[in-house]
Image 1 (cartoon, rainbow, N blue to C red):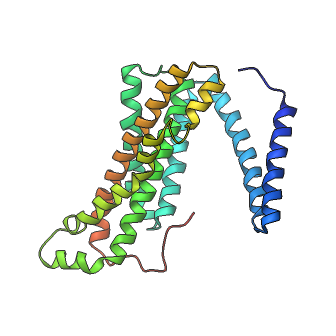
Image 2: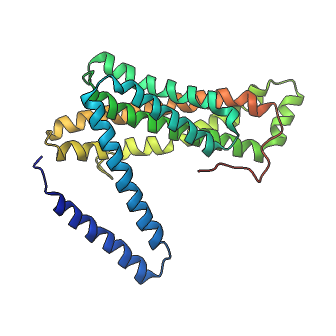
Image 3: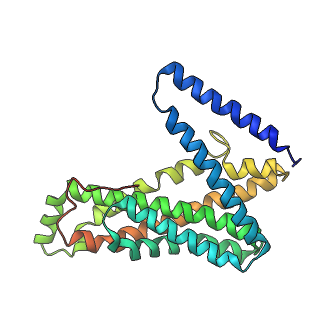
Length: 255
């Protein structure tokens, strides 16, 4: 891809932000400040991430440290979103790790992607983010369903069911709902949307066929990571949630 002068990028961004502000102003939608803050944060965060990843590419030994930091941040974010307290950090972190490994190990072990920092970091980052989303959605859905259907759980418990057995129905439903975004993204790829990795690879000069192959790896890898992460999450949280009074209505996910 031809290197574009920075001023051209800045000009395009300024025009795009101007369009956002103009439309919101005309429509009298009071989120202009939020939009500016979001753009500013994105610019700062992406700049910092670019600097860090550039350093990692030059120092492959830093890959492990960087991925561990990503896993820690993803786990903490998921814990906050599920909203059941810091005590859920171990199972949440384990679910994200197992989900990510389920996608990364087969891809790298098969040689589908070369084992080097330039491929390990972006691919692992994608699947860690997907696993985090699946954990947040499945854990939050399980929490909400148990809160709404606690009488059913108590009925099963009174019949002698274990906590995990008593919440099995809600757990399966939570997994199914958490995978809806990943399934939709996989089904619609190329027809409804062009996924980000595919577009980025095309802009980077890779052939359409090569970009499609890599994007397919990413999509199926995400589906594998999210499936494992969601199932592990509900299994690990089932006993915890099925053996105690449900979360009070005033508590919920944060962040």
